[in-house]
Each structure stands twice: as structure tokens, then as C-alpha cells.
Length: 415
Ligand SMILES: NC(=O)C1=CN([C@@H]2O[C@H](COP(=O)(O)OP(=O)(O)OC[C@H]3O[C@@H](n4cnc5c(N)ncnc54)[C@H](OP(=O)(O)O)[C@@H]3O)[C@@H](O)[C@H]2O)C=CC1
Ligand SMILES: O=C1OC[C@@H](O)[C@H](O)[C@H]1O
Image 1 (cartoon, rainbow, N blue to C red):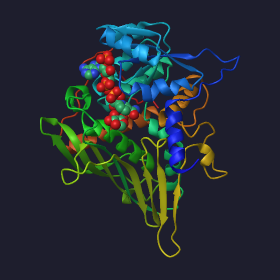
Image 2: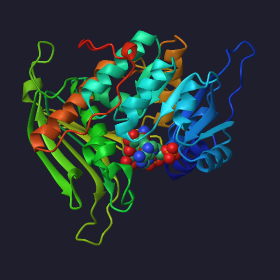
Image 3: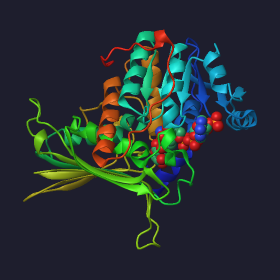
Image 4: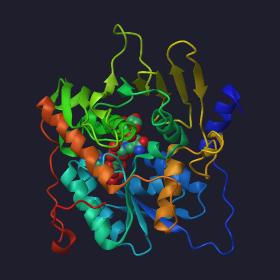
């Protein structure tokens, strides 16, 4: 269904997904527990879980018991843990198979390590931690324990992102010259005092919104930055360690398989409070990637929440140049013969596609898409390089020291 009615129907179904039918021989569902009564958990897990026959959200743990109970009641979650030991009680709960970790970034490492050590699979919010080294250690431990760890870069799992990636890599745009990716959050969305403004918790616009822009750029380029060319933070007036906004550009090294890479310049932008135009016209969310080549250009609008709305606009240059728009809510809309997956519905959010892949991986089925350990490590490395170039402090390392057998300690990265 096209246009406005399609949009209304999708948004309704995103929030009111149908209950799935459970096959009589289906394995028991995976039981998920959530660290924190987090704002993002309903969108990222609780609502998507309603339409997944193999997922049940069984428990939530919050630092305050009343808060945990209220959250559990609101979202139909059976168990609520509360108080200063609540997260540990969740980790110790033998009924829990999987932990969803949407704690502030600076707590990702400690609580993911504890969950992995207890043999739980972990769906870990982005950015994976405060440093590439912590990220490497988490994946190393997951590998050692034989459990699944995934950094929740949900946007990657949606067919719109996959289609855009395929267009850029098809050669249709000619030799790629530039990649521009932004995620600018308008002023007024993120409240003062939010975790995103707290250095100790791993705050900063590059960590929060910018981690998507860096990830998307690396994905589209198929490479990691070799050099940061410019890094321009706008620091928060009340906290010079926090970048309220960031503009950066970087270069890649030529590789044997992609001799053009050395000619590509990438630029990223992130903001936690994009100010109104001329001081009074509120800005809308700016979420896009534009890739320009010598034969054409393509833009993906709204790579972060494409199920709500998105488009891919492709223009080819020169005489006979053409313009077209694609919208790809499911893999069924993929051009014939090039389909990259099967599962999905128009109302599947990025988070629902991600949950499908995560469960498939745990169950030993091949997921339609995946974000590898190395990808997560490399994203943190790129973020570190940008902070360093800007002269801003690296986000603080966790003070948590894992038990001896949890810290594998070698410097080889998990693949
Ligand atoms: N995938 C996506 O689309 C999104 C991902 N995120 C990511 O999810 C994570 C959480 O974001 P969001 O849900 O907005 O965050 P919230 O502000 O809701 O915080 C999440 C939880 O952190 C817990 N917490 C533990 N220690 C602290 C502390 N010292 N200060 C504040 N909170 C604390 C709180 O748990 P308790 O209830 O126990 O008090 C809270 O419920 C971040 O990593 C963020 O980057 C965020 C938004 C979107
Ligand atoms: O993950 C996120 O997605 C969109 C932004 O609103 C948010 O700040 C960020 O954490």
C-alpha cells in the first residue's frame, strides 16, 4: 500500500504486531532479561518480541524496585528485580537465556562481561563500549563461552540499508568520490542531564548518533578509515569533554580489491541538539547517507528508522541520465533475481529484522545479515581516532576487572 495510508498502516502494525502462530514442534522460546527499565527497550526488544514466536521477555532489572515493577506491569513482563543488586540477580537467574543490555555506554562492558561469564547470550546496545579494547575483550569472552554477542546496529538488518549498499556497490554510480552520512537530532528531544551528556557514562554525540554515521560509512565504503582528515566537535558549554555535535572527515587506503578507495572522502555529522534555523525555525531529524560517484549519486533517507519512512533516490549523470526512487520495506521488493533474504514484513522495524537474525544465530540457523565482532571493534577504533584527532579525551575505560578466567588477555581479535 503506497503513500500516506501505507505509512499509517505500517506505524499501526509496528506498534500492534500480530501474535505469531507457534508450531507444535517448536523449541521453547528464548527467555530474555533486560538490564534497566530503559527507554529504548520497548522499541528495540519488547514490541518486536511480540511477533517472534521464539522470544519471550521474562524479566527486567532496575536499580529501583518500584520502577522495575511498574515497568514489568506496563509491558507484561513476568519478573521484576530491583535494588542495588538487581542487575546481578538477573545475571544469576537460571531461567534467563539472553540478556538485552541497554545500559549507558560506559556500563556496557562491565555488565556484558558479567552476563557472558554467566553463559548468557547478549544483545548489546550501540556503541558496544567506551573503547575498542573493551569491545575486543567482550567478543573474545563470548567466543570462549560459546554464546552469541551482537552489537545492536539494527539499521544494518533492514532491507533498505542492504539495498542501498547493493546499489553503491553495483558500479551504477561509477567510481565513488564521496560518502556523506548524518544523524542530527533536533534540539528539544534529548533532555538536559541525559546519559548522552555524561562523560563518565560514555556520552557525546559521536558516541551516540555519530556511531551510526561512522558504522554506515564504513559499511558503504567496505573499509575502515586510514586517516582522519578533519575533526570538528562543538563542545557542550557546560562540559568541555562532551561533544554536543561533531563534524569529521576521513580517508581510506587503496586496497587490491578496490583500487579507487584512496580517492574516496567520507564526511560524517552527529548532533544531540541541532539548533533551530535562524534561532527560531525548529529543525527536523536529519538522517541520511549520500554517495557520489563520477557517473551518478544515491541518497538513502532515514537509514535509522526506515520502516517508518525512507526512500532511496538514485540519479545518473550526463546525457541520458535518469532519476529513480526505490522504497524497500521487505526483501520481496528487491529487484527480481537479486533477492538478499526472505523473511520480513513491511511493518518490521530494523529492530524486528535484527531480532530475527539474533535468534537465528543463537538457534544455529544462518541469519539474513550479521554484524561481526571485527566490525564492532573497528567501529570503536574509528570513533577513537576521531576523538583523538579532535583533541578530545577518550571516553573513560570501565573500572570493572573481570574474574581471571573471564579476561582472555590476548591481543588477537575475535572474528
Ligand atoms: N538502538 C537504538 O535505536 C537506541 C539505542 N540506544 C542505546 O541504548 C542505551 C540506553 O539508552 P536509553 O534507553 O535512551 O537510556 P536510558 O536513559 O533509558 O537509560 C537506560 C538505563 O540505564 C540505567 N542506568 C544504570 N546506571 C545509570 C546511571 N548511572 N545513570 C543513568 N542511567 C543508568 C537505568 O536503569 P534503571 O532503570 O536500573 O535505573 C536506565 O533505565 C544507550 O547505549 C544508547 O546508545 C538508545 C536509544 C536508541
Ligand atoms: O540509538 C539512537 O538512535 C537514535 C537517537 O535518537 C538516539 O539518541 C540514539 O541513542
